[in-house]
Image (tube, rainbow, N blue to C red; front, top):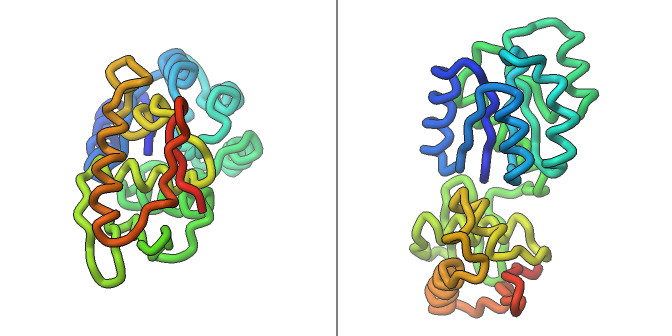
Length: 224
C-alpha cells in the first residue's frame, strides 16, 4: 500500500520510511504542510501519517484539505501533544487513529494493519479466492496445502486487486499503488500485463483463474 508521511522531524520520518518499506509499503515523505498538500494533490494514498506540529502550520488544518484530495485514505495523527482536545478535534475532522509520541514502529504497523482489516472487511487469516487462499500477513498464495511461489510484485498486484475486488483498476492505478509511480509514463504499457500473465500462468497450473478478469482497454478486476 502507498503511504504519505508528513513529519518535520526528519530522523523520525526516515525511520518510519525505512521501517515501512521493509514491510512492503511504498512511501513518500513531506516535511511541511505545503509539500504534503502538493503530494496529496498529485497522488493517491492508502495511508497518510500526519504530524500536528509542522513548521508552516498546524497539521489539523491540513486534514480537511487532505480528505478532499484523498477521501479513501486512512489518516493516523502523530503528535507529541497529549491533551484530549487535540485528539477529539482530529477524530472529529475524520482521522482514523491517533498515535502519541514517542511510539513504537511496531505499534504503528499494528494500527495500520488493524485499520486496513476494517477498511477491507478482512476477518479471517486465510482469504478465499476461487480455489485458492491468500494469507496477507505471511504473503502466501495457497492451493490446498500447496504454496504457490509468486514474486514480491506479483503478490502485491494480486493482493491489491483482491482487496479492491469487483472494482476495475486501470494500469495507471495499479502501477501507482504497487510501484509508487506510473508505468514508464505510459498507461498502456504492457508492464502490468506481463505480471498479470505470469500470475495467471502460475495459478492456472493448479486451478482456473476465471476470477481474474481483463477489462479490455481499461485494466483488470478480481470478480467475487
